[in-house]
Length: 551
Image (tube, rainbow, N blue to C red; front, side, top):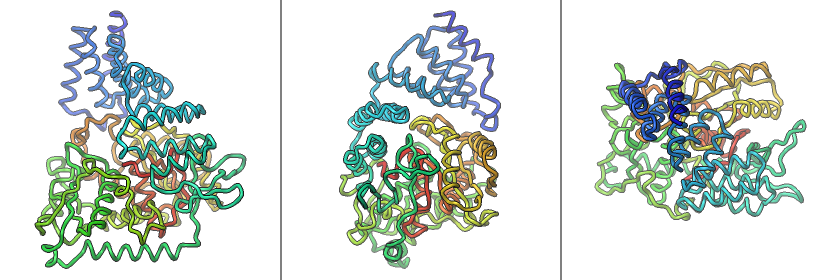
């Protein structure tokens, strides 16, 4: 054992620090110091599981996943505890060793590390492998181990497995827990549909391939029924008028209007752009229900960055009036400000307790349009980028297909979707549209994924792949510390946010979409696209689950 541990250490030391392809994300000086410290600890005491574990954690933070896996193997050889085995499983998945990672996660469960996220990962892997009965049991167990209010993503995953298993009644019940909506409604002797999202069952057969709910985890959301389009547009206009009256009163009236104060995430509890807006949407729904004006807390938003991160902070001017930094990227959500009224309630995402009735609440006048319509319209009202992020438009304005490839830390939470799946789904969309090849807009939080998709796509189709005019964002960390600000020590966070806002905006204007609904970013783009078309989603392929409410 000692000889094997020394060999592992020799391999790690011979590899150097971080890989060359992440040199643009150089580790902070603190991480380099920590790496040297743990290397010394392992050299002095190679049988210390804590030292190997510490070295693995540091290497992961430095984006050296290969080195982190080797170090974690060392820790597990000494102490095969449930927690360390689980961490090894997650690292193996980050290394694209999906089967080995799932095997390690299964072992961690048997050792006692019961985790709803781990169980969901295992269940979805078994689903993709065709073991439907085991997948159903595992995902149901994952739902029993977590808070009722946070089961939306698990319920959506369960609905997908049950559909593939032919259990439409079970799938209907599971999907209702994820969105409060009916999954499928019978429209003929053998045909079912979802009137809100345009899903058709059984799946459409296109050139010998199943397109629809099924075929592993792939789903096609078809174009919605145009029959009620005028009714949906009238409802959207009415809601916009009511929200405008609530959010944009004359300034002199603000002192007498009750407020709901939304607290944007800070450096210690920061979340991504998509997650933040879904929290704001819940807050706006609550403000509408209580007839309160939604305003933002003046506390700094971590996604706006700070003056210390760059010589030319793009939020300098807007911060004079808006200390949160939100209006650096978006138009103000209200004419009122925090402190205008003595009557206020605070709304902090993750700390609010909802009953299913309040979480899925929709005004009675809009209930016939469903939860997706309601949430999407609220998203559109809030997500209004500054003009500089809306223009200039893409060079080809004939209608593009938007592809969002989610990588980063998300690979620790959901099954990894291979690049080939995105290529295949894009080809299916091109075949379904039956038009001359439109350009492709590819968005990702991993530059390697962008390169791989472009290379594979050009091998099978002569298509134009568009590039935005803003610089590409850096690869985002695959491991998060829980304090997002320190995960980007040398990143211009405000520039990263500008790029993300622009990407969501462009995706929402796509003619068709290929994405994953487990991603808050992708789901937000889909909701905006849904709202921009008056409640008719574009042709959309999601590579994992249906639209749902994860909270």
